[in-house]
Image 1 (cartoon, rainbow, N blue to C red):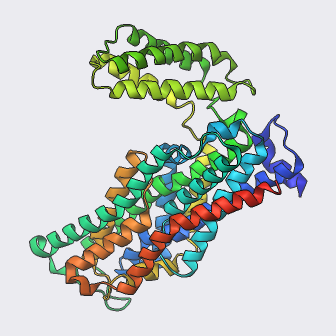
Image 2: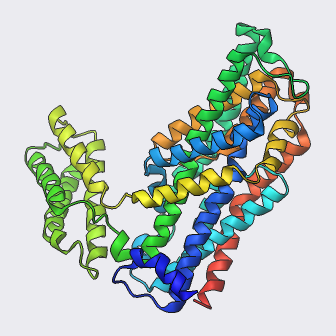
Image 3: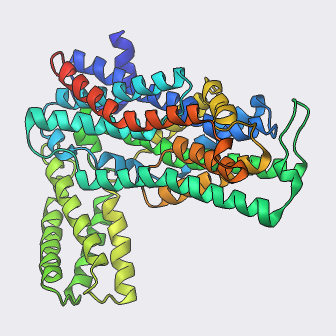
Length: 472
């Protein structure tokens, strides 16, 4: 067994030495994050295929692989903004200063708490948010870490930003889908859109079928670009926790490129005019941080100094971001473009994920989509409303979901595909036939899961962190 683990982890470990027990835990964590994304595939992506299956636009045998493929592409092409946003919830800088075993406790508690709650709700057929679960688990593990070790804890500013996104997105989904459905009913008035399919052979007209397949494709792609990135963030958490010297900063970016970006920024700062006292102080502080970063640049690959370099880089990048947003600095367009470009290069040192990480999560999510999808699909397709899903309801809810998730991904904010789409279906059904058209029992179950997910995930991760701390 140890020979197999060594063969798997040797390319990652390089010259880093881990004890046998930590090597085993490292392998377990890698398997767990793949398992989490696999579960996410059949737990969340079922939402994307529910409408095409229940409107008879595609048979399950075609819909599931199709959605899985677009989820794969969504992760692969979606960037890492959401992944890095998730990681910013955790006290990574504090974590990297402590023994690897502490990071192992953090990773395992987050992963197992997320998987347990996801599998439980999936078994009961309740659409539940993997995003809520993961974020709750991260908060719980961070609170346990702070309680045990002190220092920086949860990044509550980031938690509030993410929490607001998670709360508002289903409300937007509900309202926008209801509005779009109202428009289709009273303005478009295309009768074929409101047909409820009867039997397996009652398939939609070609134009409506293409519309439904397109909306399913968009939801699948944007689900990958948002939810899939959470898996990327989790895998990066494992790598940073176990191998901080190798993954705390992006060693693939050459020193010459970093130095050039820092020098360009300094040159612009020399003639940048800040009228406010706060901006002047920030400008001086950031300029000083750039000088220190240039001095530390040579130590980027030094195991003992990597953490300091990462912290210095984050000081520079946050300073530049704040200066670009300052209202009392009048930037020349050319200067703003120069600093913005340099800032992207600098941020890329800490906000990154190797291609193999993205590929691993893409494949896990894509395969997971093709397994175990039926429980959630039945709830979405049959139980949110008191009538079978019609074409217009399916298209409007998925179109709104795709737009909401896509916009959130562009801002680096995680949202719940489950809640956006299920609330969108509820909104479209309300617009079709009033409150009597909704299945109150199912909606109560979904609402209960929505309310319980965060506290349950927080408590589970908190307790698991303390439990693992006794044995690792």
